Length: 479
Picture 1 (cartoon, rainbow, N blue to C red):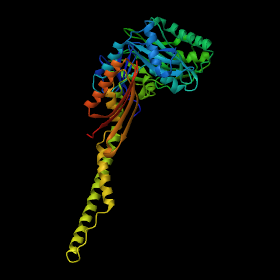
Picture 2: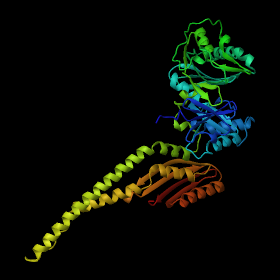
Picture 3: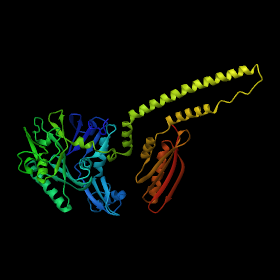
Picture 4: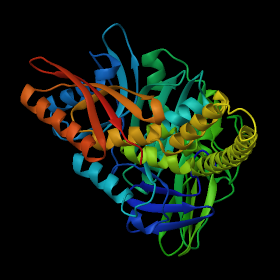
């Protein structure tokens, strides 16, 4: 299986939802209509990414950004801040790239992706900008261009770290040429302000063609194109003259291409990498041409915003074939050990019978005690049987995620498998809130663990005015 489910992508972009399945595309009214077990890429209704520097260490930058946006009225208290990356700038400051998302939109996306009860993971589309930068220009100053509909999402970064992010939009199809010129102007302004020279421009995009339309040979870089440089031949006289490829039928549509990026790279004398696109035919006619799945392959599972329990379930499903093979191997070893132990036991009984017969005609002698090695074998087989039914570490982590309650912060989880593979789980954490709320959250956390079979062995906690630090030692019997 590939690292990502490239053939099972659901893309929510510019107000429409499509499923890409191998070489076919399907427009969905609801995400649950698609195939289960997929990656769900969403733009959160068009939410734009931002970069902000705050006075806080990287670990707490998320909270400071949310508070600042609340104070300026740019988001509600309950809204979400989806972090993409952060880096330390000085002893006490952090620069972070993030996307502010209204809470109702955030919850709607997670609920929609989970309606089919499959093992689905949700990723922000803005995460692809960072993934493309780190994959195609990890040690350069580069600009990443994501082109879709009448918009261009632009990220400029150095050595894989974002420096500037913005969205440029055309308000009509007739303004697309001007938008290409706006991209050039924005890049020149960034170079002047940061005193950096952009060395490479990276392009990927999404375009929908009409039922009887299509892309010209120069549009979108050519299907399955492998060109990677910005020194192309052609008759173009300016950046704005080849931004889009128009497809005319009874309705006028615009299919965005990559030719303008190649011209821009040539004029600025920089390298150009166009991520090779693929064409996905739609059932009702027309097609989707996009390089988005190729960039999605660069995403790490940890960048998903799905709950931790879903992420562990997804990983467990991917590991299921290996787990099954390991289980069969364990069963085979246990069976072999049982057969061998039975043979040794039969031989021992035969020896005891022989000694008993000899003792009837000779002076009675004490029957020798079975050798210590047989007891060792018996203990080993018993331990092996216990290990096969002991709770696995990923099950323990999933249980802790199930019992987790905001605003509890888990600092560490350790499991020690003692005699008969019975685990002792040590959980350390803190709750940054008032004592009454922290005490109630701690009680709910412990109660949730007890309901699924855990027993508290030891419990310690230390309280202050605005936080509670706790340490739990838990154990759980075998299933």
